[in-house]
Length: 130
Image (cartoon, rainbow, N blue to C red; front, side, top):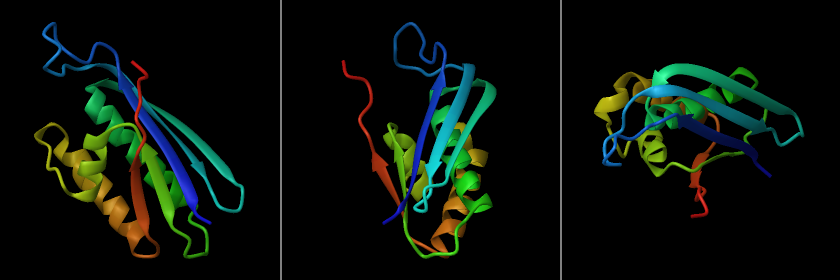
């Protein structure tokens, strides 16, 4: 048994014409948290101008905040699922991105708060079928 959190973020026109450099555009993120007892929480957040990477990190922040705001009285682990490996590296401290330093600090603090009472594990779910 475990709690599950599914996240995603997206930004419109997030790369330049070369396809190599992220640029800002209208962005948003979403999170779905399924508690082990069957409760569900859905959140979507408009972010304004942001990169796709920022939106992905905000998706994890949103899920962590939802979970901590409704944290159950158990020690069951929480599994976070995202299609962005860079966001996982930000959450686990394996990457210190210049493009979202404040968000990275916030996410790592939230993850540490969760880890104080239970195990938090991040899973990469491959996106895009092409």
